[in-house]
Image (tube, rainbow, N blue to C red; front, side):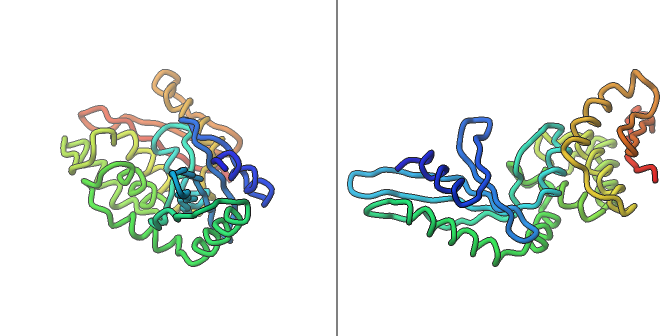
Amino acid sequence: MKEKDVVSILKEQGWTCSKDEVGDYFCVTDVGGAQLQVIPSVGKRSDHFRVSLMPSISSKEFSEAASFIMGNDGSNAPIIVSNEAPEKLSSFSGDDVIRLSEKALSWARSQSIDEGLSAYRVLPTDAKGAMPVRHLAALALAGDTVRLDEYKQSFGNGDRLGFVPYITSDMIDRALMIAKKINRGNSGLTLRDSRFFLQKIKKLELLKKPASVGNLVCTTQKQGNRGQTTFELFRVQ
């Protein structure tokens, strides 16, 4: 049995499955207010199998916020990841897949999205890998405009606060947009809105006018001696 066979069984159990940008299988299902994602891994050894579903949980809002901040379509951005080691099995069957999926579901139900987001919010600014984007997304969803504005001002003064090189001032601007929107009591960005505004924002300097879709409006203005651009996203009631 290989990963594609595991995926077929999970689909029969109601999971939504696909492949990521590098061709790896993943499957997603809703667990209460969270999204559980598994990435099947099946390793065949001479006398046993090493099997893992590598479960993680997230939320639609968090994944969309991280995607919007990064400036791409993105995918699932995990909030909590299970670090359990792969199981060593002498044989591997469909019953094992169902057992492992039920184990993943039980694990997901025992996790707290709020605690995971809280952990991301207190990360140091010199965190590595994907952690900085998740830090910004968690701050944005918490409406923490004070901290994000401090980051923005520091970047404007040439102090990157230890952030990894791929974090840009534009990303912090986009995190601030979400935080301000959260504070106004508006619902989270959808991926469709995010893609639209990312395209529009790139053109705003030339258009010199607000961009809008439905009742969402995005405006831009220059601020400071460095000519930084500030984006403002709001919903017209």
